[in-house]
Length: 80
Image (tube, rainbow, N blue to C red; front, side, top):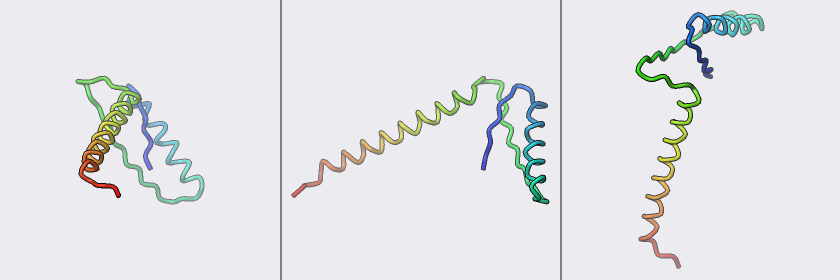
């Protein structure tokens, strides 16, 4: 499971991490493993919505390319 948080202040990111861990401990789980991935860029200033839009556009492009390949293969098929 993954949760994406976005902030210009890294200190702000520590609070939700602590709260998530405490919530799991409070229901009786004695061990919690948290993996944190920080993606910090100074060459581009993209927000999460822009990143998701880019991914969706790539997925649509790949889908359309695949559909085009499938239809071109159908040109050689004879239907009875």
